[in-house]
Length: 102
Image (cartoon, rainbow, N blue to C red; front, side, top):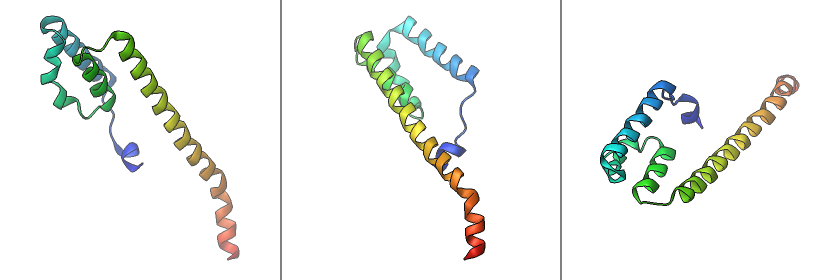
């Protein structure tokens, strides 16, 4: 959880430029050209998985279904984590007076 709070996200423009560069690579050399780029993409598991499916020549519908399911699962995990923090913050103010009494 600490990593989620301290990890810097890429700038949106940098991320967009990277995707455009990958799209240009595929347009010029075909999907298999992505294989050489895969090791550099391990830092972004979502992109790594999506491009792995492209390299494996999965149908577009399958890629869309897999990545949509993964995005939904990630959103649900994040909502559960946020809910836990929210509940903790609701009870935190009571801890001061309780500590005073003990």
